Amino acid sequence: MTEPYLLTLAARLAAGLSRMDADRRRRHRDFILTCRQSDGGFRGREGESDLYYTSFALRGLAMLGGRLDEDPARQAAEYLRGFELVRLSIVDTVSWLNAAAIVQLSGGDDPLSTQPADWPEHVAARLESVRTADGGYAKAAEGAAGSTYHSFLVTLSYQLLGRAVPRPNALIQFLYDRQRDDGGFVEIAPMKRSGTNPTAAAVALLHILGGMDDEIRDDVQRFLLEVRSGEGGFQANTRIPFADGLSTFTGLLTVQHLALPDVIDEAAVERFVSGELEFPTGGFRGAAWDDQADVEYTFYGLANLALCARP
Image (cartoon, rainbow, N blue to C red; front, side):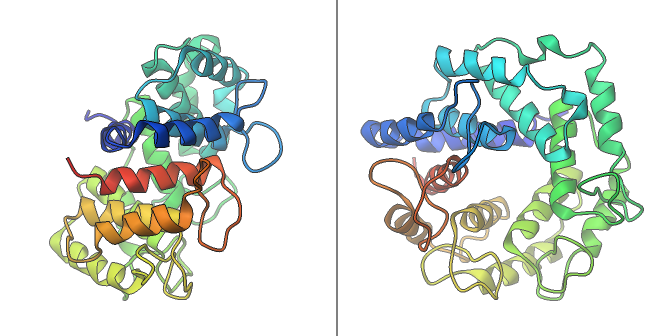
């Protein structure tokens, strides 16, 4: 099996960010560390430690430095060992597995040491418990219809388990059914208007599963031209009149993945992210109207700059 998508992406982003000025990297690292809690996890804009934000914080730190320092890695491993992996939601499962992989690659204690020996079988069974009749995966077992985003998360989880997703052809057909006339993809079946983020998830999944073709590539190019913003980034969909850091990242990643150089100017993306989203004291916000940084959008801001970096 090929290396998991998330780990390949992490290495690519770290390589791109390695050319960033050292003082600039330090400011963003310091910001992320201000969100670390006493239990070793990381918080969002408020509240206590959260697996979702911990995963983004560790990915951001790894991107900035390649390896985590001993203290953040040790404390993060302790935080992760406090969870029963087999009882987590799908979002938390991929957050936990990704965070654990980063800690392990950084030489930290193994977060898996407290999990039962047969944890991969239990996690795989839990993933399949949210499989839906349409071939996709839902957010929870109660879900009647598949979600493009959660199907993406489940597939990433299987990769981190070292396993292939079962019945891949059914998942490919599920994704084909989520494409719309505007060329993009939707999150759930009733939706008519495509979004940048579900389109990126669908493209990544189709590449992983071997379901991408030139016709879909051309359709996606047409859609991305529609959600390209005059600010220099990407909008979440055609009805939202501003670009944001997440949609810019997923849109730019898709542009590069499909080799669509005429869709957007990477120099304009860099100007948008540096000029509108980056705080000079460290951290990134979600969009120009936002007034606060957090670890999730700091990851996306750094990732955008990494994708724009040139050797």
